[in-house]
Image (cartoon, rainbow, N blue to C red; front, side, top):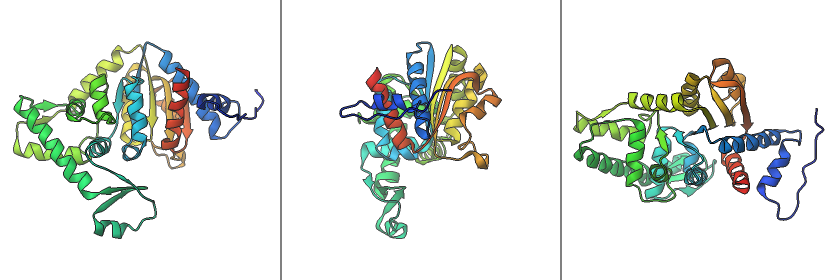
Amino acid sequence: MNPVKDIKIWPGMKVSELLAQFEESGGFGARYLGIALKIFLEMLRDEECFRFLSFVAAPIATGFRGVVAEAIKRKMFHAIITTCGALDHDIARSLSEYYNGDFRLDDAKLRRDGYHRLGSVVIPLESYGPTIEKFVQECLEEAYSSGVREVGSYEISRMLGEKLEDENSILYLAARNGVEIFVPGIMDGAVGTQLWLFQQKKRDFRLNLFKDSERLSEIVFKAKRTGAIMIGGGISKHHTLWWNQFKDGLDYAIYITTACEYDGSLSGALVSEAVSWGKVKLEARKVTVHGDATIIFPILLASILDKL
């Protein structure tokens, strides 16, 4: 056993110098964040590792979006698995504004005044639905006119990203850096609804998620090793784990969550539980970090930038 070491703080210290001490600090959540830093560095330095990033939608409504954008810009990940809401918020924030609010605002008043509330973020009604509808319909019309009749979710993500002009956009940066974005639950959101509405007008237009499966199978079967940072649970986390079971599991796995495992939920399940399913290798470098990802991931990424 290694003794617990006190964390030392000094003026001008780097974020990485702080996190490097966490692993030997004994606890509580800090220890696991320190381990995550070491695993992330190993994963980035492994040139034969295909790297996934998965995340849920809500943080993209916040400044967290900029952290994901920076990771894409620096080519830290090769593919993203997320939800439809992430596309919604990325498009809406590229074309309009969201505002700082509070968890305890009067929701009935917000509704009357024409605002949505997402946690501590306030979204004008016109910044969401109407903005997304206009942009997506224009993109689909253009694609259809050029002969596109059948698309997978990663192709839709690229199509939308190519039409955006916001350098802070996840879709924009992914399309220009060769990062494929898979959205297995793409019908569950504003972009998905616009796909359905477009198909009501153009009956030969098809969403084909089998194309996603074909592309993901190509990735996992060709990859010598795979790694993932999974932020939040749900379909994004599960889809990442699910596809990696077909190559005997992830070699590197970092999971950031605020959920508890006592209720048996996927969101609360420690990354170690995936070992029993063959979705993470027994010998994999793995850790679960409990905490708010809008705090944890920026600190982790800033530490990585110190060391690269």
